[in-house]
Image (tube, rainbow, N blue to C red; front, side, top):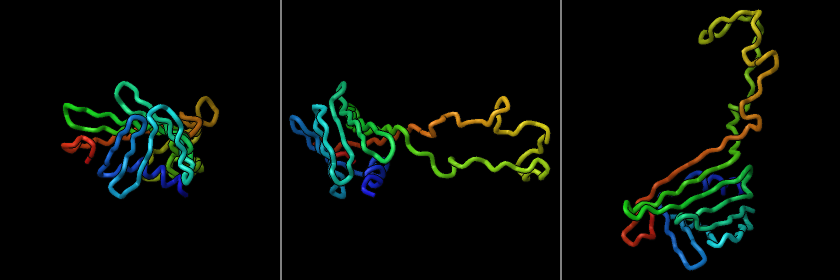
Length: 165
């Protein structure tokens, strides 16, 4: 249950962030008080309540946090500051995001003698099934059923430079 909340928090970014940085740690606090601690030396931090782990490091001026222990797959969260535009861009790339239930269902095979629905063109009853390739049942292009997704949120920085809104 807590893992699902962690995934939801990752995919639904808050409206406002407060970021505090020390020599070895960055702490991100949301408007509702939730905090994320990240050690910037690549050390692993595990949240015991969610079982989610983060390994964070600086890469070319951006803070990159690799997140594992999610329900399925892993994620990478990147914090990049554009000092000229006074903006913080937070990008979350999720590997192996589960397909929505409606996309996991196989289409129902219709009896070839049954008339097609009004929005479907009539087809030759002797033709191979629409989901067949070379006489074999077609498999999803992505055989693992996984989707990789990237989400981006851009925040304007306050004058102090540590609050994003």
